[in-house]
Image (cartoon, rainbow, N blue to C red; front, side, top):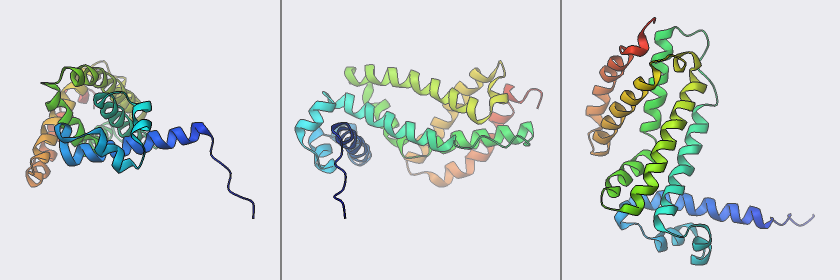
Length: 203
């Protein structure tokens, strides 16, 4: 048997970076931003402090990179298949809202909420998060355009998306507070109200 092929330096760097990002999200969810330390991330990732410092110079930089990492992966998973072309306009609207809700109840969002709160009193984190938030809104719009292009092409879609995201994040906060049953009860009515907004014109 031939010996296994040795990984290139680039492959080793990518593996180390991915391990740091996954460990960082785990630590953020477990300890919160205030309790998260780079030492804890390094220990969970199984890499050296030098490797961490090589990839990320500050805690805020590491945390935001980790959030982008898991958010990108989740978005890629959800847009593998566009909505079925035979759906009615109303069905397509409801399906899109369900996909957006899936994004807001997935693993990255408790971490994001944690960072929003921490950014109020952390100037470095606030600057990083502001850039991330702008990019997240842009990528959410792209996600909608891939998933339901006809709906996303409507002139009122951007304003609808802002309103929808605010409603979804409000419900997500309740879920994080341990009120899952209340959220499950509220979501159908919130979804119906969102569906009845300007996006429904012509539907």
